[in-house]
Length: 189
Image 1 (spheres, rainbow, N blue to C red):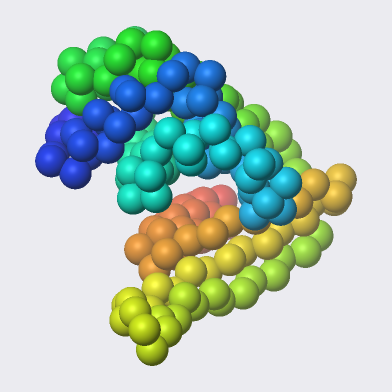
Image 2 (cartoon, rainbow, N blue to C red):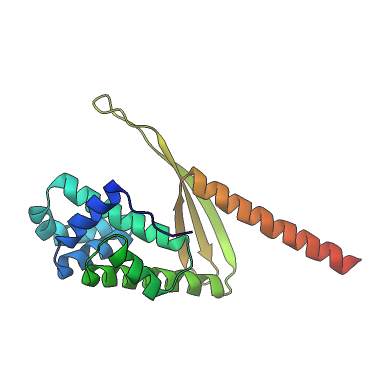
């Protein structure tokens, strides 16, 4: 199963990405990984790009970058395979594809370091965020679950998840609990 399947909208987004110079593209990729506070602070850096791309194209550029990075998080692949798929399947310029692979590598490394490190959770909180439509523009309600966790060394981890992501997380926790119960049952027998 391929991690990415080209479609018209994705290819249009890649075409826009290919039209952006390397430095500005790097700023766009970096911007997608910032949290809300950092995005507010770094907004001025995007003015160059905004003058080059009109609103709809800039929006599609962000959506394309975000979509590709999210898809990459769901599959195991080597950087070489990803680079090849981006350039061959999506016709992405190699310099743009290399920036995407570096961003994916950085995110993956952070996730793996967090997973591999033994940390004790001392606080877990959650919120529900729902985007509502206005009377001018009707949009579907999009619930987002926000899970906030704090470790004993005061590192904070915030996860924003849609309904599907929350169900996947719940299923993972359920599987872990089943494995723990099975292990406990086998050790007591």
